[in-house]
Amino acid sequence: MKSLVIKDLHANIGDREILKGLSLTIEPGKVHAIMGPNGSGKSTLSKVIAGHPDYTVTGGEVLLDGENILCLAPDERARKGIFLAFQYPMEVPGVTIANFLRAAVAARLPEGEELEATDYYYRLYEKMDLLEMDRAFTSRSVNEGFSGGEKKRCEILQMAMLEPKYAILDETDSGLDIDALRIVSHGVNTLRSPDRGMLLITHYQRLLDYIVPDVVHVMVEGKIVLTGPKELALELEAKGYDWVKEDEAAAAAAR
Ligand code: ADP
Ligand code: MG
Image: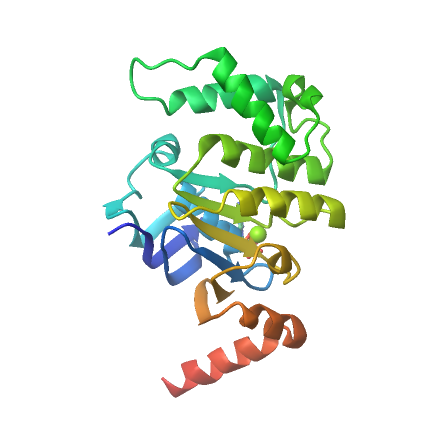
């Protein structure tokens, strides 16, 4: 039963409900995209899956290959194979990219196994080349003073090094110019694998020209209201989100 299954998920921030019964299944090898208007709860969903402490889950399940992960700490979820690339990556002054990633990779090794420095740097440089990142970045503090595009590349570099089973990419396209978008998308496409499921969260269709999803979902007010093939993204681009909301309102009225 390999998949990331989100079942009837409800989550609050404070006493306000943001996720209102969201269900979604991501199979290994598939790329699912979630599109939706701002404020519909897309980032909330990604943070709830990763285990962000600001959100309270009030109902539902998240099953990683059959195991409910909602009771696990964020680092345990990460070790089990969940990865989240943030919409707004944090700056971590004083911690270099090289040390940060080395600690992250080492933390996932089985007990007693060590990370050889030469192997580590070989892999790091290989992945940085893929993302067209200058090697000088390894000695810079994580995200400190980075441009929007550099921050997003740094997120994808983390994904490349951690090799997660399920990756959630929250608005990886935001703040990218067209060249950075091309490079980041190439990086993500290279990381597509039959063993890896991906959830791409985006407000705009443009990203999906570069990373073509298998399935597109529309999220409105804390729920998936529509699911379709990749062409759905084009329809949304042309028609906006209002028609989905109207359909949903009509369906709700009929219930
Ligand atoms: P999206 O990513 O789809 O734009 P978000 O998940 O960021 O949506 O936000 C959903 C709703 O939850 C918004 O109304 C937002 O203001 C609210 N929200 C999200 N995070 C917080 C927070 N930390 N504190 C208060 N409100 C929040
Ligand atoms: Mg968001």
